[in-house]
Image (cartoon, rainbow, N blue to C red; front, top):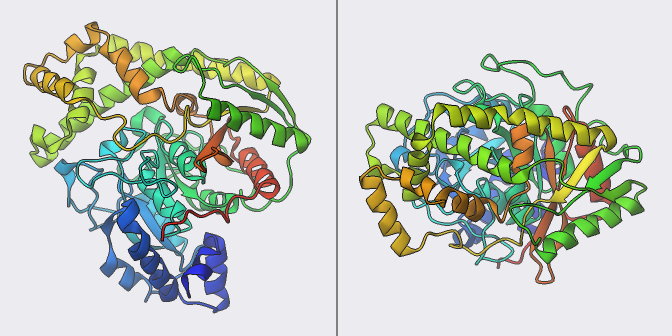
Length: 493
């Protein structure tokens, strides 16, 4: 199979070729490796190669809806027994996984051929993918810019044509942000629909979930069919879907009532391209027969951003403590930004954490009130076009100050000096729209409906009701048919 033939198909399309006998699994693996060899040195999407594992895999009988399709795991909480999982951290580099994750096993049962793992920021803690361990991943549409994070390696690999779909996860936008940056489909399933076992129950207090980034809506739907459903570590079993998500994709939804907004307290003046992205989507939806109207944000997004980071900082503190305890790693095993977040987490009281957790019900109630009058909320996915590599780096003088505060355990002083508010603005200001779906546990999807005059992708986000994954996918398919995007690939040669 030559490169152009390989790039012409999505994941299900490649699987159909294998099922019909037109190509073999090893042919597809060779094509994926050839494409990676040609483009990955420029984008740095793949951080770990699993060549021996993949070579064995293609000699085995493969069954399932994606039998024979090359696939990449995210190097964060997507463990494959015996293979390294670093979570983007020096402290875990080269550490083999003790067992295979539930979702990874379901991908294997679906016939996928895993041949590598994709780059991610340390512990998935940023909306860019620039870990010290593996270096920055670059956006295939503009190599000076980020593909987003934390599933930036997966998004870059799919956008660059290495694989048609790749493993991803989302704790605050980490599927949707990279999808928006690279012109792809990114569905975050609702809370509890996709399991996190066998080692996790509800990661990040239920904010985080597993999923994929893909070129086509039908691949995302079929992948959700593969991974949805509880395992023994699930805290509860959400209502099972009525049939597969992929089965009725081409049935257009009835006319929907969609409220849109670009307003955000963390971005008082929305970027013009974010506004244009939503306005373009609103016009397309109107042309398709949906009722679209501008609304005010249904929630206090500034407070939500602060509460989100409170939970995140405390999580970083407990995660670093656990890794140090289990591996004996020292402070030099972790990036300075991660250590700062952890110290900020340690400076927070139990009462402050509980207050942030309790306010989640306020955000759930606000979104529920919105959904009494609207089927979906439409926002930009990004606050601005993909930012340049290194844009979030801390200036050297401030790094010196931070080192000193870390040595004397004085990071709590940063809170009193208002540094936390600055961290909220710096880290969430360019991606302020995605955390709502994580905090409320609702499903959300980013679709690549807009490009800047310079050709950079700018996705738009739809947030649905509880169990709204099917509606999001059906609307996504309707929009994909009306404004096709899958044939667009960056020029990397």
